[in-house]
Amino acid sequence: MISLFLDTSSVTYTIALIKNDNIIYEKNGESYNRLSDIILSEIDSALKNANLSIQDIDRLYVVNGPGSFTGIRIGLTFAKIVAYALKKELVLLSKLEMLATIENSQEIIVPLIDARRGYVYGAIYDKNGNNLLKDQYIYLDELYDLCKKYDDVVYVSEENIEKLSTIRPKFDIIRLIKRHNEVVSNVHTCKPNYLKKTEAEEKNDKRN
Image 1 (spheres, rainbow, N blue to C red):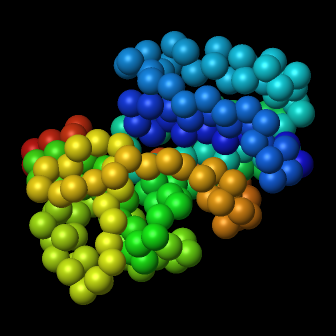
Image 2 (tube, rainbow, N blue to C red):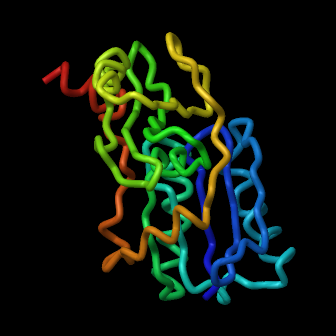
């Protein structure tokens, strides 16, 4: 099986091609707010590098949130179009779970994405990948209090999180995708997992 892994949920992006259980191509880059301009050419470059075409892909793994609203839409839209048009399998993944796939000695891993104004997107996983607190939009101090019951905790983020000492993630893509075989039955129903309303939706709610 040949799979395409795609994460466009933050200021960085990850593209990987996997043959069976081996990564045959991987690129991690920064979009510099030009993701919509570069992502197609980057995927095309990945396929050419591996001497593959998009038709050779059997399954697409795409991160559908949480993270950048625009970035998530770009990656998910591409994956949905390819899955529908070429009848390929599609699997949705969590960015927080992706952040938690680090090799670390700590028993508890807390992935974090800054959501501003004292809030984060966060979750709690154990070192075996079991979800102890579901992905959610949560006040940072509240999440920190929930973590106090654990003795051996590491906080993981691609960003600097105020009040916390965090480590930078080194993703284990193979470890992540091995946990997931939940192929989407209807690609048209796939939606971004923002975990919170967009600013436009929040403003509309206030007006109503």
